[in-house]
Length: 640
Image (tube, rainbow, N blue to C red; front, side, top):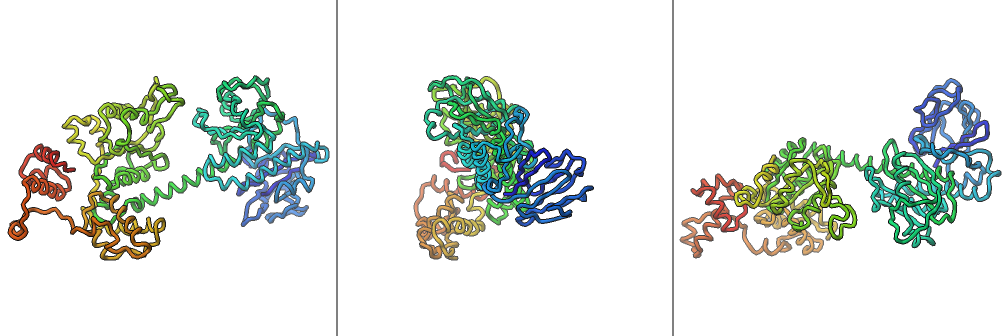
């Protein structure tokens, strides 16, 4: 941790934290640290992090940059070096706040600093506006300032380890509570201009925690800080607290201060510190500390967001360059799927994915999303078959508080949750006709209506649907709306079953083996005999069934090479299941009486597979009409 202690002629002092890779000093307004001094050039010098050290670099300034009274153009700094720029002197210091205190470098705080105009600075964090010397300060003020500096030092070390916003807020709230001798710290995440109570992270003074749970939170103060985007200090008359008051009551009259959480023009939330019982008065000088912590939070949120965005962009570029790595296979059918994904990803067209259960419909949908311009936003998958009929509307469109019994708070539906992203509706053929009508309205109008709401809400969501059912046949039977079918079927993708791309079975088997071996057992590989057995099977459950078979084999192999005997019994106790036509030589040598309906069912199934589910070609080959084919498929329970 590196500091600059700037000493002015009037003995007032500013302490800066050098947390940027490059910090520019000068007279120009765009500099990170601005000097109102005619002896300072517009861009005078920079402090730069170089290989774990900090160097000062002069920008060919008119009056020069001096370190320990020696003019320099570039120099690696050591703790204690004295730097002179124009008429200002600064001391460079590294280490902990304890060392600052021990060296007597901590001056007196200025209690008269104006509050209403205070905002977290965009340059290096100005920890405190100081004046005079430390000896003139009251003992309590020195102790409080020391504790706050120590807390800043600790947070600067710990915040980079936070994995998400919730972890970050948890790391911050309790140290702030102790450093400010406050009773309550509320860190509020912003959701647009809506301040949702469930988004608050609250820390209480331990001895007051139970009572403060019923103390009202000043929502009006939160909104004021959010709207003005500046640190504000409130000190008004306290009203009695009762257990019946709402946690978001605006009847809040007590000492508090609030600061915005922001960085680089982006607004993330609000920190509110208050003392409902007025055990200890909050002072205006506490704003400096709270603003510094808020800036640290904003900085790390921005860094985390940037890294996640970078990872997503790299993933999207890799998928666009070489196809989706989640879709495994080398067959012509899979190459065709990759090409189709690339074509539809550049549009916002609605996509309908057909395929048997286990063929990877959700993986294809996710690949379309990740390869699209929406790839950095939400992808939300919803299984329509798992939505109870009475909850479909509230799950898809959300509901307002009080819309029905048990609706204690507003809940966003799947359409709002996937805003600017992609909503994947799996098994869309299972939706009831009433739910289909509501889905059609969203697709037509681009608006939803929450249950219990009275005004439409615009949504911008791409819709991808999937089914293993024949929706056109359902339309004919009036089980699926025709107008919705054509809305969903703008682009249609047909996923081949695994039995129609057998060359991909060994590739998939090896992929699942590598994926599962570390979590189950250190298997040594799959034998050629086992791979042959896998390749000879028809896999009615498709890719999902193949993965389960590899998982079974890994458990049975107990760390050894997977052999044929380690595979599930349905693979080892039957021959390759190949549908075939009845031949004369079979009747002569291996005659087994069968009903005509069994023979017809097997023959129709074989023809459907031969023509990849194409009903027109299958009907022509069988010499029957398409309607007759559909009737027989329904009677024999055959999937298209």
